[in-house]
Image (cartoon, rainbow, N blue to C red; front, side, top):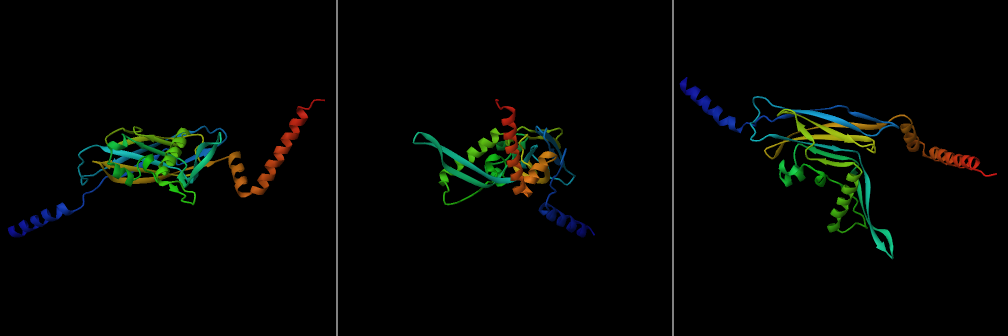
Length: 259
């Protein structure tokens, strides 16, 4: 009996180190998953709460947790143009087309990205504006490879100035060691469509968990009616706009006519 007990203990001691340790689990909740845009919309701010779930089998960590929240809006074609002086006149001399560039990006974390993980890991998991993939249009007029990064940097700078691209290296706050929150700011010009929200959990320089959620921005009221008419009945919409322009011009000529 004693031999059997010793054999069982030895077997357990051999197998346990090879068993995978339990990892943490992320749970997040968004204050609202749908934003309605009307004529008085001036932007809004959503709050994302999250928690890191652990149990007795979770492996111990040397350091504290890090959180990176990435919000990506609907992708669209964006064009970056370079102006040069030609014969004394400023003109567009070269362009770079991005077929599937995010129309909105927010990357939020509890501390600078460089302190969370290595540059290689940040690129692998697309953490930060510099690491999010943009699909380019490699056509016959494609710019030289050494200049492509300049056009991408220009696009990021322009979208950041408009409030559509944003990095917040101290935008995530830990309320407790396992509970965190952050704010997602949507400007008045935020594009309509579906947004992807991905939350990544890092510890000891590696990513250990991730979870995703969705957000929808849609127009309501007269804005939605006009947008639907322009998209679904473009010919009639064009005639209507032309008629309104003619009527407005005629009315102005009558009001301001000098007899």
